[in-house]
Image (cartoon, rainbow, N blue to C red; front, side):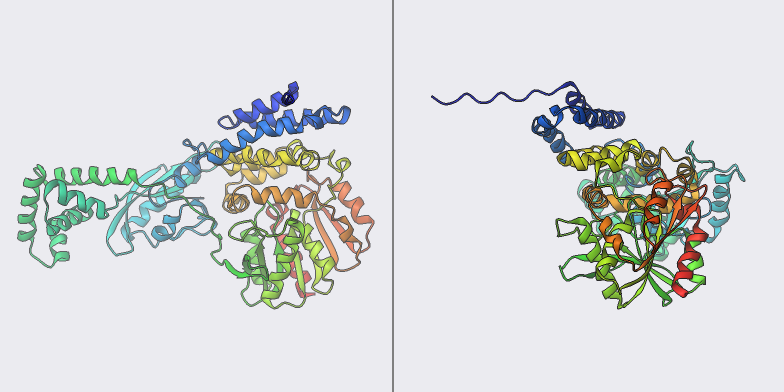
Length: 570
């Protein structure tokens, strides 16, 4: 007689709270916060009993259903981030910039029409000369120096023909000044429109072309010049088109043509922007494992070389003020885009720490550098220190913009802010749950934008929140945050595994020297703990920066650039 199946384990109340919040997080942003709170309660309970550990399989099985839901979901139908709503889901070229001209967000088509890409600088070459004064009047409204907040302006298309763009001011309560939105208005004409006119109205190819030119120029004399014929011939052809389409005038025909183009325009997918290097200097090479490694550079081309390794949310580029100082001091800072971030291939190794360290070495070899100064931002210090400890002659000195602490023991996590504390405990105690945690968070990022994520990441650091409040920091801050999500959540999952790895043994070497610039108000790595760690190693020095948090690069861009230059030149 077969044995009866074992009863399915029941969940306790805390696990039920986690499961309920996970299901709600599919559509409700507030549920993500509830899920974090429930997980924190679970970890507290696990210290007192073994119930949580015993229920791992039961909870994991049920959460797998939520994970499948996230996998099957497309982009959220409603985009709550006003900047992303305008740009990422536009059906034509669009971008958003600050009043001073830094591009905050742009879709791929904006590069072709407006030479605009995230982190780049606004140009007005695409505007017709007669429209530039009006454009500047609207732009001044960002800072309250003008009352003109909207305009429709003529622009010069790639083929030399005229098109229209809408220019207006976007006001967001959290920013003191408005943002400038530029969006292409001209309805596109493609083969589908031509085919419909031929089939539905029996227009000849010549009449279809006359219709297209009328929609574009609204001027019979200009159409005649383009066609190489007479105005009388164009008018004769227009009368034939009126008869076939049931229209009575040029205005009536343009209205019909606009409606037809709009119909086909709505059927097109939104133009979503992929990851693009803000400086448009991205290059790539293939390492010995055959993976593509991308990198960019800042400062003076051909200058004294150095290497920079990025962390997570801060991105792979220093602020523009730092870049200018590096250029003036003759430094070329090569910035690697680590495996799984941006356009770099994911790591083929199961160990994300050693994989990142190997990528740094691959870049140094690709550049032909025998020895150089290296810079690390935030968690980028961990793979850089691992690489330097294994290749002692490769790096002459390391400058860390932000400190570091070992986090591979549960006792190391008590100082962390809530969101970081929960995810690191999850990596240590319930690693099987990390993926669903990040998928739930990523779903909210896709809907509410990267600033939703950044403000939670820095919620306990007022000086870091002040960086996010400054609209001039938005281009690089947003680009940096999007760098880590360019390929989904895998890079962030590996980042947590890397930070939580046992790596502090790499600090036992006396070379290279390590200088740490650390914020006094860094909530992730408390300053006194970083100073205490460094005190145990003669080759590590720490400079505590008052009024700074984790985002030191944006809080002290001049100091950061001068430290890099001084190390490179000394």
